[in-house]
Length: 588
Image (tube, rainbow, N blue to C red; front, side, top):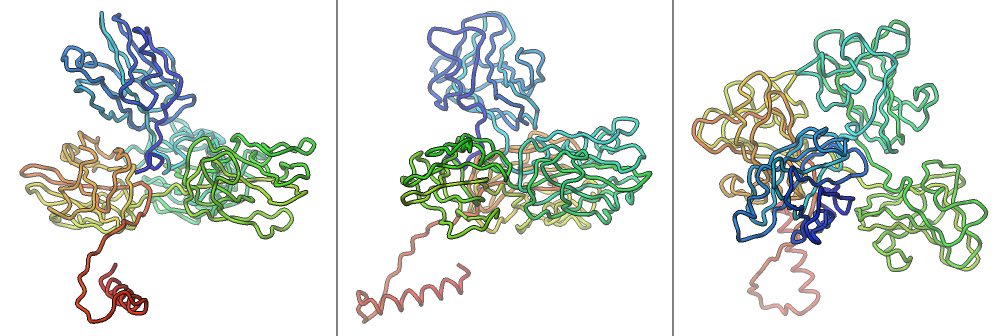
């Protein structure tokens, strides 16, 4: 399995600091990607270690690796260490993510931080004459999913109370806690709300959740705008969709067909209008090349290489007339490139031109036009455009590089469960896109009270699963989910419950959605099971995010009983056709 398919370790090779250093056990050793080089403080009061992620992230989990030692007193030094995530470089100003109770020799453990916001991750041990040793600290967020969560919001006014603009991107659709989970403007002319995505995206889909307690009709006529301009507070950007109506408490999806923009606005034209939003979710593709480091073989006048990655289509890069002119952008890490927009030819891991394979050749491109070239998930850090020949000039007005950040893979799957509770608690209710919060009894799956209840999702293809999101019921019995195991794999032995474990659910508060990282575990089947007697498994939504689908190579051994000469090419061709037909009949 290649490491580029795993979630990104945000801490890798970032700037680390510690309160003191024992001999040559540097702080940076804990972020070098190697588990047998460690950071180490001197014995002191309240030793600490910190990594600067360089910008604010929503931290999904932190992985800590303890040192290897045969001595229990050395291994146990990590006991009681506190993990904090926040925006302050000092220790105690940041909230706690987790406390490490114990960690065995050389072991790595994951600690869920539940999308805590922060630039700094700090590990410290309270007490006197303590030593802090860390052999690796890894910090993860999920790459993909709802792009709105990392954005910034504003609105034309704020209704009395706590109806702040940011409540519309807090990950809570406002259905379990309406008055603290939604944004709202005052009653005014042309009320608007704006999301700054911080980067330019190609927006595939916008999901809007309406309030459920009253006034559902207020959303009628709201316009969704997407673009890069802040003229008229962003409300002059092109329209993706107009919302005719959304029933109370429902979430409706609006397709934007890849519209490009940094800003997403909602506005209701007219007098005496109120704009209330219980959640705005946005899914799309990020331009990986935007404002990255670009280089070209020569420069004509002031036509800089960076002009082709500035997000503006009327500023261009330009070489002098020369033999084989080229332009290159460094994406800073390896990606699977889905599509290139501009005039891109090669994708690979080498900074020189000809060592990288060809993605596409541009036969022609009309004046001012933009064309897409599919690269079929080619792997690479560098995207290079070049023109072979003598006395050629290469001019590029924008180069955009995209990978598809896949959505919820569960929606296309098939489900089953060990039993079904009386009523309509069918297994498929857990993948209906409704987290069960507005219509509990029609939005959740549930088994009977039984031994080892289980639920299984067939993704229909093999995926490398990055994340599983589980939504618990909100009306009662939140503790029933405690101890549920998430299994992922390709076997149906014991109904799939013998596949490897991704995570064990300690607890999920009522009505909440918790994320569990599976580190790229590979499988077609996702199972949840609660071991024990007299258990009930209720799931209001299961979401699965990851890379794929992937095909697996199989080896088929056959024994032929034939008088024909199997070395004859015509006989071989006929046998392959018969085999292909038989496999097709079998559904392969």
